[in-house]
Image 1 (spheres, one colour):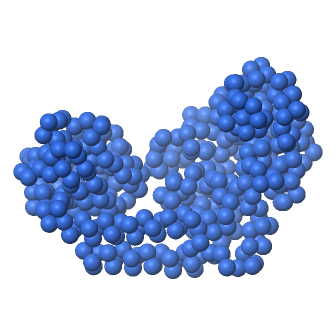
Image 2 (cartoon, rainbow, N blue to C red; image 1 turned 90 degrees about the vertical axis):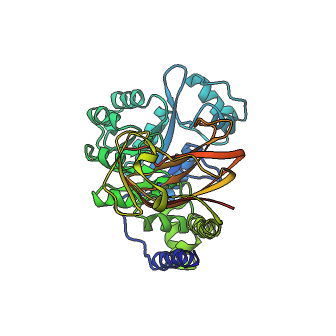
Image 3 (tube, rainbow, N blue to C red; image 1 turned 45 degrees about the vertical axis):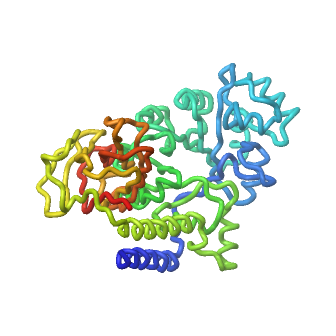
Length: 426
């Protein structure tokens, strides 16, 4: 496996060269100040001071968190728990009334946290600013409230929706720009790409995990702009833009600060903590592959031992496959292959697989033991995989010999393939 390790490291070197050569392309999207932007090294203030300070820094789009009061008014607060305690220095006790909120702001808050009325007044005084809403509970009700009470701002308010079903409702309320943010959406990349075809979105916003699975590039291919949140370092911004992301939500990285940092030089994608983590994971995988193929006992291999009659299956159908490779289609969300009982059970085994999956998901390996012959959720190991080809090594350690395993290759329907599969131990 030394050759395989060298191949991985050569691939990493090629990635590094490619990323180093990347130069930031201009984006038609505007950068978004997260929760009003940072002020005095504090974030999530959702305050008028933060809006003013970051407007001076050049931001023109501001994301603001909203929460409902007990008298059904909207105030600029992330939540009534940690954010409440951090903002006012008192233990959380659940939602309060608008009047109580305003009193807390006046008496206990370092900054002037907005309510909906004061925020709309600020927006009227800054005619070139846009507002992005983030309402985690009662989003549609909040947008109906805003649409009914402040129709003059519909063209300047950019609602975030959390599920595709919200889109037609929000569009009918008169909002011209809509962002779909994915942090509450459970579907994978293919589901996202399919859903956006029915929507005319301003952009899709995602976390760094989805961005690293190349969702930005896939959205670009169908002309849908994308954001990633929350990025505060130039190197990280460059890294995600190299992955097809158009712009960022940020606490502090204004365009002017970014331009100044680029002019000074010395910062590149290789300095990104996300890039460094990716590099480290790849090096760890290379080591795992070397260790795996040096294990002397081969308990099972797809190439030598597989036959359709020897395995049990669920929600999948095998296709005609070339020697040493397995092609199959998953027909539901719970496909699996149960492999034969091991002739030489061990308490510690490892599974290697090179598999191609139709969408980002998780691969699970369930195992049975001599005294517990049934598969159960408490006896499993798993690893995240991305759309396309993946190489994985999964280690299983049990208190008694492992007699059998079951492979769950993913949780989405579609076409799968396994190019190689082995189970080994020392």
